[in-house]
Image 1: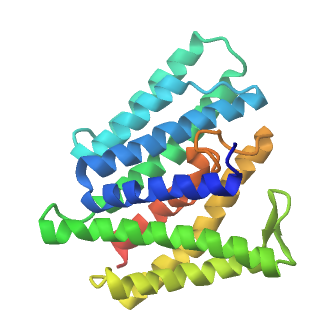
Image 2: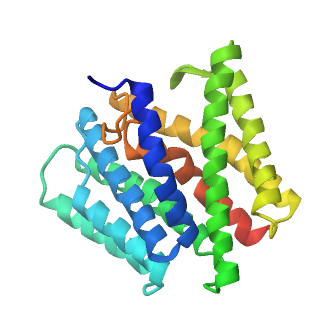
Length: 273
C-alpha cells in the first residue's frame, strides 16, 4: 500500500532532521559534506529543470567549480578571484566547441546557477566555520546553524498553517498563488520567536539585538528565497526541482530559504554583530 504524501514527508523528516542536526553540531568534515551535497544536488536539479526552456547548463564545469569553491572555503588554499577567473575562461572556452542551443543563455544560466547556489552554499559553510576550532568556541557555529534551521522550518510551518487558516490576501500570485500575506506575517513572527527561544537555550553568546535581527533576516529573506526558487520553477514549468526526496520534492526545494539567507546572515555576523 502506497504511503500518502503527508506520511512520506513526516517519515523523511524523522530520518533526515537528526542527521542534519548532527552534521551541523559536529561541523568540520561532516558539515562540509552536508553543504557540498546541498550545493551540488541543487545545481544539478537547477540544470535539469531549465532544460524545459531549451537551456543547456554546463553541468560538470558548474559542479567542479562549486566543489572547488567550497573546498577553498574549508581549506583556504586559493585566491577566490583566481577561481572565478579560471571558471569564466573554462566555461566560455567549452561553450565555444559545444554548439548546443544558445551559447549566451547557456553561459549566463550556468553562471547564475553557480553563483546563486555555489556562493550561497559557500556562505553557509562560512557561518559554520566562523568561530575558531577550539572546542568551546567551535560549537557556537553548530548552535547557530541549528537555530537558523529551526527558525526556517518553523517559519515555513507557521506560514503554511497561518495562511491555511487566515490567508485572504495573496502575497505574490504570479509566482506562488497559494502564499498569502497573512501566512508570511505568521512565518515572520515565528522566526523571530524561534531565534529568541534559541537565545535562551543555546545562543547565549549572541546579544538580544543580534538574535532579533537574525530572526528578521530568516522571516523576510528566507521567505523571499522561497519565492525566488518558485519564480525559477514557474518559468521552467515545473512543480518541484526534482522528485529526489519523497513527499518533499528536491534538494533545492528544501534548502532554498537556507541558501538565500546564508550570505545575509554571514555579512551581518562578520560586520555588525
